Image (cartoon, rainbow, N blue to C red; front, side):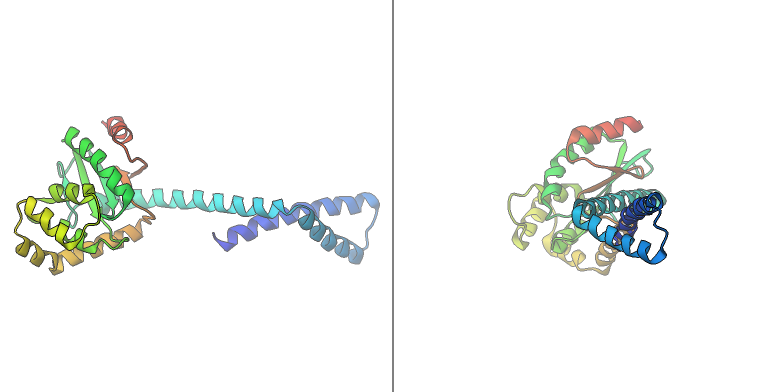
Length: 246
């Protein structure tokens, strides 16, 4: 919570007390500056002691205002950086390159909600061949090896297969699980691991991480559709958002 917001709101609370005391002093005819100052200080102290809920209300209002400002700032970030978000130079994508509708997903392979979203998103992908889906894996939760494997698989045309396999795997994705999934996707494990450790993959993941900070991704999964936030984890709301744009 920003200190300035709290101070501003507390000042407004105190100001209301000041006005009340000043009016009372005017009505009573007390015009002594010294007495007025003492009365004012005492009135403010008494008011805050008698009404501690006002402090809580001020803090809650400050938090609400900060959240609203953050959401507005993030929405502006999505729009102003949409070209960079929707282009897939360093990110896997499915669908037409110049599609009318583009959905970007920031996700983490170790995120429980991302795992829940994945099968739902797969349904949407299969039912919308004219929509572009851009995948931007972040590694907030220790998923760097999985993200590297996914981007390496993408270089060999097998991203979607391993994306779905990793996110629908029941249990921890160990190095052995990574190898198994790569094999099932028809990839040469040794070759894929060499690609995983290449500078190209490292730079791609670094660029995605930098972009996530630039647009203030605060949690995953984060979905963005044509520059607008899409808060959904089930097929229905995602399909509805697509239909609205068609």
